[in-house]
Length: 134
Image (cartoon, rainbow, N blue to C red):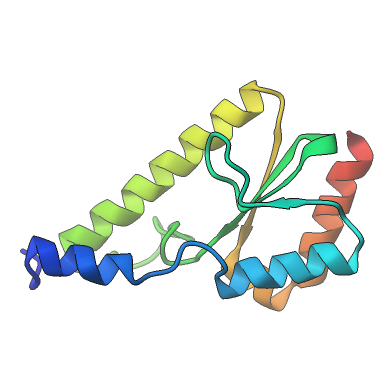
């Protein structure tokens, strides 16, 4: 099924969706600060992580459930081909980025939107455990 918007209109709509300072990014920032974890937000590096803990070489991603395909293969797929392609491309890119960073000896932690919102304590424990191991 074709997109109902022109390419120009779709581009404009997509440009309005924030990729920085999102609700979940700000929640993660708060969690890191509350736990006195030194971090850098939106560093200029491969894969554009949301946060890094440079001293420990830990990259942290806050992945939106819809955009990054939470349980994508178990759910009913979006009816529009545009959205299916977008989500699948994001999932492939996430995998590629994670693999490349790990080859470069970074630890990569990815947190789902719903976990950051509803299970913040679990997210913080994962970060602290990873920091203790490095």
